[in-house]
Length: 141
Image (cartoon, one colour):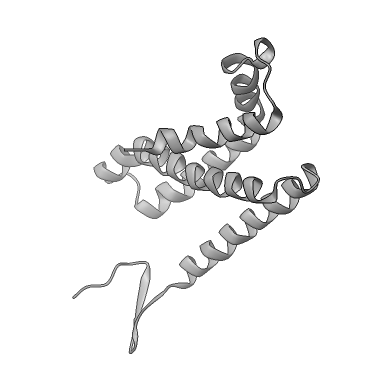
C-alpha cells in the first residue's frame, strides 16, 4: 500500500507531514483573526451567526480558490512546464495578492452593483441571513 505524499508513515499508522501541520496552524490563526476582528467590528452582536458566516466564508474561499488554481494551472502542470509545488507557490502568491488588492472592489460591486437594497426595506440581520445563504445555495449539488 502506498501513502499519499503529504503524509509520513509511522509504526502506528500515518501522520501528517510538517507542511500539513503548518497549514492547519495557519488556517486556525486566520479564522481566529477574522473572528477576533469581526466580533470587535460587530460589537459582539449575534456571535453564533457571525461565527457560522465566517466558517462558511472560509469554506467557500478554499473551494473557489481551489477551483481557480485548477483552472489556471491544470494545463501547465499537465504539460510538465510546472511542478505541482511550483504551481501552488505561484497560485498562493497571486491568489492572495488578487484578493488583497482587488477584494474591496469586488465587495463594492456585489454590495452596490449587483444587490441594490435601496428599493427594499430590510432589516440588517435579514441581509446577513441572505448573504450567508448565498454560498450554501451555490454549493448545493
